Length: 300
Image 1 (cartoon, rainbow, N blue to C red):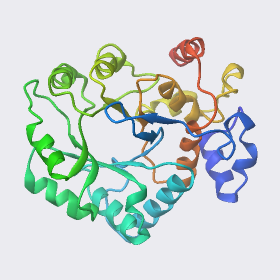
Image 2 (cartoon, rainbow, N blue to C red; image 1 turned 135 degrees about the vertical axis):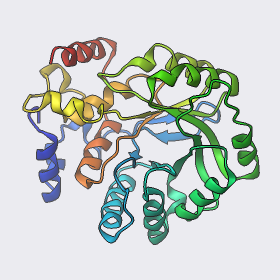
Image 3 (cartoon, rainbow, N blue to C red; image 1 turned 180 degrees about the vertical axis):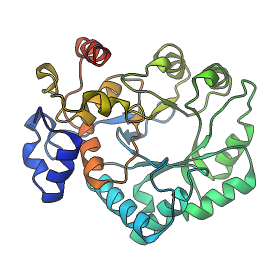
Image 4 (cartoon, rainbow, N blue to C red; image 1 turned 90 degrees about the vertical axis):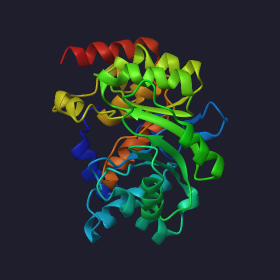
């Protein structure tokens, strides 16, 4: 298992052989599911979800088939969270069609994003998602430190969403994110965070904990940088007690921080979805192991 690559995992999953290779400590069917409480309410959210940026851009039959297969794996293995946005091409429409066909909207935690507090944009997102309300409504790419969330809270009061959040993956805007996070105190904040991109540890994660905001981590594989860095390499012996694949190694680094509510890697591959969900089971690295993980990646 130490030498299992993501591509090999995908091939094994297609044949049903992958489950037999997962060590008992991280086997999806035997280890308890890791779920984190949303700080404002205590509602539990499974710690691994599905991101849809640059994944389901085109609303065609092939994309819907891929989305249906990935979402089926997500649901069958304890996942609920699907994160999308009004600007992710046709992703909202694809997700809406798949969940509508499956008749299982109530089984998922749907998060989407708007570019502005615009009622027309909200209604468009709801139509595409084929729902009257979303679980999480986020203001996308916050760049104004004086940004108000008054309209988002009004929509929450009206029942269009259950939670309000803000997002950014632009580090130059993290000052604005911190200002809005501290003043408006949204229920969620979504930022990019990976083993080789830890800028949020300095300011955003401590502040999120202070204001009791749940944290979603986008781009947990560093836009693919981490997989490229370890290509052809074996998982270190000292990490094999908690990681059965490189994806789980990278995701569990993030989940070992208790301030992280959920990770949302994007994929259109059911085998990769299954692999990612493996990070939601079994042991997490301890502080010493996390330091070794940082050192290991820095040495590549």
